[in-house]
Amino acid sequence: MKLYFYTNNRFKFRVADEIFSRYEIGLFIVKPDFKEIQAEKSEDKVVDALNNAILRHALAEDSGLYIQSLKGFLGVITGYVQRHLTPEVFLRLIEREMEASLLSITGVRTESKIKLFRGEIKGRVIPEQRGYSDYWVDTIFIPYGKNESIAEIGMKNFLPVSDWSISFMSACDYLRGEI
Image 1 (cartoon, rainbow, N blue to C red):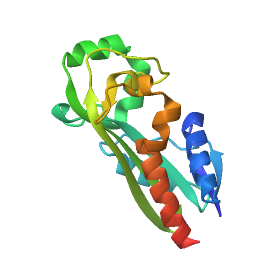
Image 2: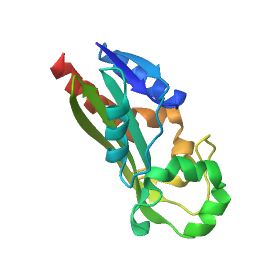
Image 3: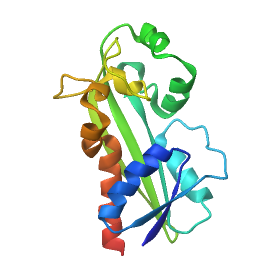
């Protein structure tokens, strides 16, 4: 089966491609030619992307950091916040440790049917950076059961159990039943 991943994030594509290839699903990157909607929920963004995807077998994903005491903020604007605020400015806003989760919503469209899959890692946001990552959220998020930030754990060790991996593998399991 061929599946077309609508994303501008090449790193996310490489992660997904590694997982989907284990299920013998060929994944191809497609740069979206439509504007991403502004929405409060990742599910809405993913469904909209799949409805706008031209190719029949399509994949879309949205993920973010959700801080419980801030009513889910950063949520769907995590990427925007990372591009426009430095980690130091963001950390001054939170000032203390808070419960949070990393949430990934992956959607698959086959024929005219859309199916959504959820991957979530619960943990806490800490008020100081630990480790280095291109994504500063990784330097302030510690998964429950760990004493290190994702940046300290390292992507190689974290990715197999990440929110992305959980939602991507759930999509693969579903597709295996559809093939």
